[in-house]
Amino acid sequence: MELLEAIKGRRSIHEYKEEKVDKEVLERIFNKASWAPNHRMKEPWQIRLYQDKGKAAYAEAVMESYRRQGFFDGYDVNKTLRLEQGIRDFLLNIPHHALIYMERDEDIRKFEEDYAAVCAYIQNVQLLAWEAGVGVLWTTSPYLHDVQFSEAIELDSRRYKLVSVLQMGYPKRIPKPKVRTPIQQKLDLCDGNEKS
Ligand SMILES: Cc1cc2nc3c(=O)[nH]c(=O)nc-3n(C[C@H](O)[C@H](O)[C@H](O)COP(=O)(O)O)c2cc1C
Image (cartoon, rainbow, N blue to C red; front, side, top):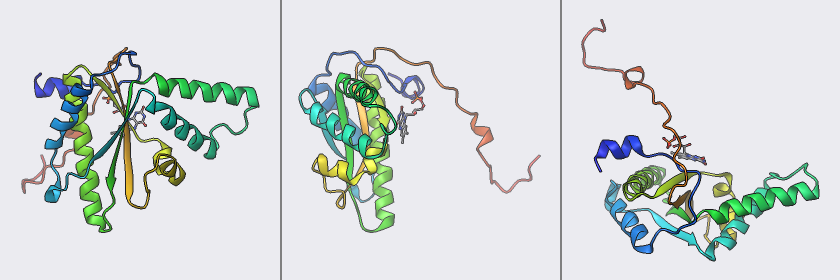
């Protein structure tokens, strides 16, 4: 696949087929994505892949975080149960959830370098997945900042920053492209010449 075709053709995927992606295909994507730029060759990305029966505990931890954050407040018991079941089913129907996290560097500059490298890694994953016919949704939900969520999934939040959960699987539906702004509206050319 041409680079531009992948960059422009990739869409964030919200609906997935039931079929799982083979472990080898996912490993190939995660492995090739490691060619992302990263300062000091720290390769700061870490991945935890929830799938099959492993999704249940993850989905429960998400649900508990939503409860703590008052997501269900104000609804009666039946409505709350229906909402919870809806979210649980939604999460369990996604074939793979790849939690992307990184070790926190105490030096803010290095922390930012690492975070930027992990984001470059994630975009590589998205493009490589797209080339392999695999859809991804890059998510940053509030539970990634919930210390108790980290505890529930047994990751020490003082040591690790949760960057994203990538929902992954074969797309059931590919959304229409969202128009981008022509870059001339964002580009200031500073070449020493007078503006005409
Ligand atoms: C850092 C980051 C966080 C995102 N978080 C979410 C999210 O939590 N939920 C969601 O539906 N999409 C999320 N997205 C996807 C964007 O909404 C999506 O990229 C945007 O709408 C453009 O659509 P496209 O990727 O199909 O071109 C996120 C994207 C980025 C880069």
